[in-house]
Image 1: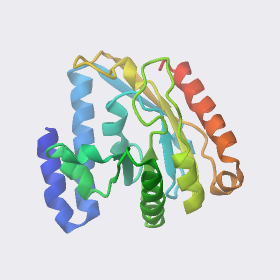
Image 2: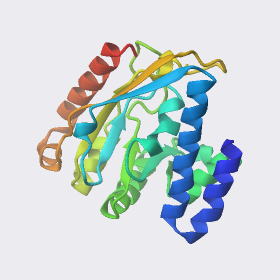
Image 3: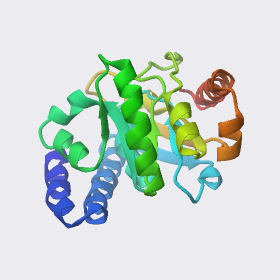
Image 4: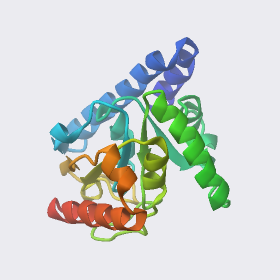
Length: 223
């Protein structure tokens, strides 16, 4: 199914970003339908009142592949920040590439930060959201990765706000393993942090606050 929808994204990208985005959303919708009726996984979304009307940086907990494939149905058109190696995955990686995903080289942190700030700022000004997983890689239930300040730096450079997001996706869709467990996955958007507060905040202090809030809410919902 992923190969089919990725091919549709690739083909319709010739007619612009919006037609390709339509098929990206259909991929998500189809996946949600299948995981509900085959795997018994239900979805609950909280805090939608915190979603802003303008483009921003979304900083989310990273536990599994589920929150990644779910994102097109949660927020307006966006781009991910991901390791460049994902572009080499047949069909799926190619679709990521044509949809303006910011692919970074982890082996060169300084160049990666520069690329994120340059490309991310440009896309935010064009109205695209930017999704950042500050832990960089997936963490297991009840654990926390090392949060990086890249999303905050980008938001300050682009003068946009930050929307934090917590969830418990790994309870049903584990970090590793093929088997999916039936249950309820909760996505919780936390209060939006406006651009003026982001720009005037100390990066380390804001990162500490974001990590505390995201992790606390993740634990509350069982993640």
